[in-house]
Length: 396
Image (cartoon, rainbow, N blue to C red):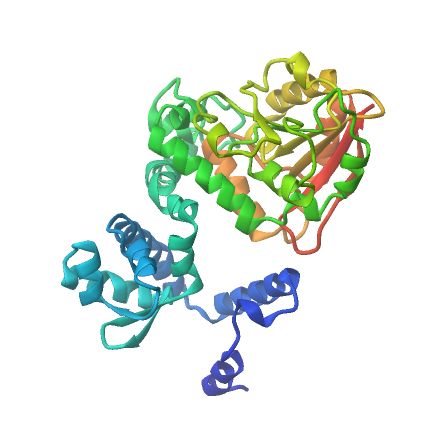
């Protein structure tokens, strides 16, 4: 039997850069997580879930609001004392010390000496990538946290039935009858911004880029000049089109189209390159003529927001705009495996339940949904150790 010293020694020097590729890092991360769960006692788990998690999020948001991470970066990012952070931010040094030692206890910053802290990659990212901090702002505190607090009460009220009605979900239990999630997000400017930032981060950090899963050279090779190349349906800030453009920088101006609701697209055009054009659109209505006949219609984490009847409407509107034999629909979504589904997929599944009475789908469910809209699955592209796959679809 190994001693604690032997176990600890085996972990020294291992970090995110220790692995040959991202798939290997994820395999190791998941194995370490499973080992941690086996080592933890029931009390360890309860403490982590009910004390450490909530207080850590509150601490992080406070330090972001005080400007600690941004000012730390501006000062050079080297190890720093709370006295110096207080000078930089105007916050009370004792308060900062109490908050920073909480983060150190969670291994989010590193205490190198008494009251002296070094940045971890996480702490650096909070400053280097401004959208990253948005997850701890309006997204968590104004949406996720209250929504999940409402979920147990909602499910109890329904007699613990599986939710299937988007107008009667945990969201309405929290916000009131008639409330709509996307209207709530779109009419709150800070939440709109933070929600879009969070979706960008989700795409950037949590998921394998779609251009690394699907052979996008075939998209460009089949381009026709008289129609759009890629239409990103429900594309938020256009982050997935930016990935395509980085891979194929020579596509013509305006050939990439990002669609979303007008409130979601407010101010987005100013940050987009000429190749990407903004076209407000409600995907529950027919595609506008200017978007007909595209080589690719792309949807990333759109259909998991909707129950089958609503998702079918979206798909049928796209089918009507597609050219048979030419157009492709790429659905970039999670597939729930029948045995040991990924934790990130099951977390997303309950998130969809709380937000919209929706769900993640299995392969069989995806195929049935696609076929019910007059389409057919050509192929499912499955990257190793990735949260999501790409379901390639054409007109049947």
